Length: 420
Image (cartoon, rainbow, N blue to C red; front, side, top):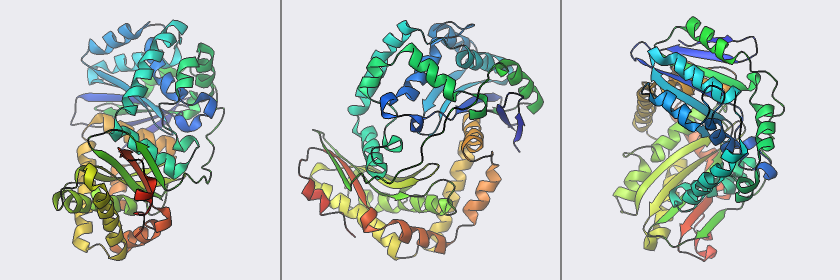
């Protein structure tokens, strides 16, 4: 069972004692994702994430940061999402202090030296180019722009080349000061640890952090991004994302939505996999997933399909949506989806990193950490009627959206397919 303490400066510390592991993960989650950006600073959240690894007072550069973690056989990384950024170190329990030292020095004493900013521009531009050249990544971003339109939730996290080429030291200091504050930050620790010892250690490392969050992200505006995104590109395989706007994470039917996505395309015995790939050989990869945020979400099926049979593949995906909307899911199939979802959660939470992420995300975004047993109860409570109601609510022709990347130029070819 997790425990929580709020430090004097407002930092929330959440821990979970995992007796079956010798690893400890220290994860810092900050409400500073790409939704907090405007067009003028689009991409600064992700660039800032890179800059924190350039050193502070104790560990003065990337080499010293890396050596500190490598010397104890640890792992460290960071990530930028739409609504938060995360920084973590995973070490053997006996090296917990090293993790705290490195993370606190990075976040409290970051210098953002201009010379390092100039060097990192090239790194991030190459990351930008990598995503542009990787349709499996790009298709998801194109689909989100369709669903959410031209606003922060519809933008990718990598940002614009203009920002990457022009952002300066003072821009990082300003953005950091507004959002990297105690009240906008959660530290989660998972592993074979004692809560009291963790609080004492983190308190000593992070007690100098001060300030208050300057602003929140804007709520989602109703912007019509259209129904079809077609990017003409010479590829050996067409990439498709076909789905619908869906629910925010706190929606009462969120877990029914998650189970619906498992039934449709969550694993190798799902309807999409068996119906589109195995029965007809139309796709190599195909999967359905849910992405949910504070005020909205989406359900989407992604697939890499045969260039010559893309129309048949799209029609096949739509047919699976139609069937699950018009015909109730059998009880046995729902039971199997529940077992899958719960089993995957159990396996994931064997990893202290995954457990820390679960705790921190719920604490930061949902107003309180959650015990996995509570999630299990919500999954078990979903009935066939709930899944049917969600399918009918979401799978409407006017909400259907399609993104395609491949050697095609004619939009009309795909627009006429978007119907039940």
